[in-house]
Image 1: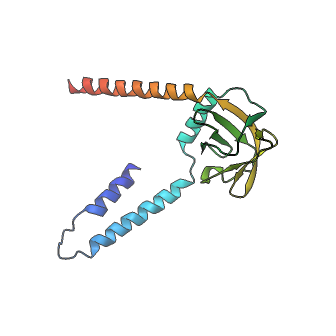
Image 2: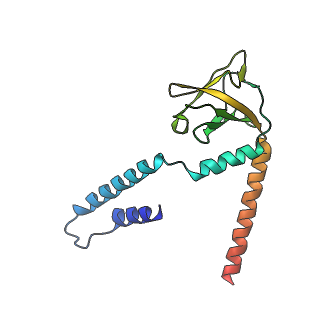
Image 3: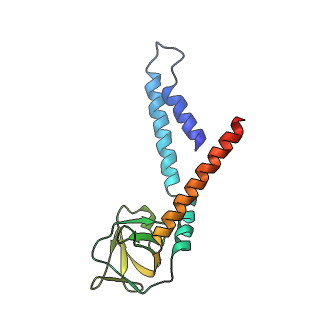
Length: 173
């Protein structure tokens, strides 16, 4: 991605060698923007490695599967972690890793989802995640220890920051 960014930066802001011909500069900027858009569109369908890493992290903090969870008709957030996995927060600290059965083709590209429920409960093997006209049957629901996950992520960030500071200090000598 760095070569594309360098290309865009060069052609979008480089002054022209012949200052009297300013009509070429806007064309270069439009060309650079168009190429950048094409590159980004081409990459949008490629699964990101970070989705898989994020899924593995949530799986590490997920408990044993449960049959059902309490659902009061709203959730505080959600994130797709691949074609068949998502995390749904029913409250700020209550997160659930939900796995759906195929086919559920639009989950990674959805802007919003819905959950079916019965009597305030979302049940595995019975209820669905609603995604762009698809009813994706819930295969499994696993509670996530989200508080511990956040604490560990903060600790990892502190350790990375400390290591970076140490590396910079060692490089300065």
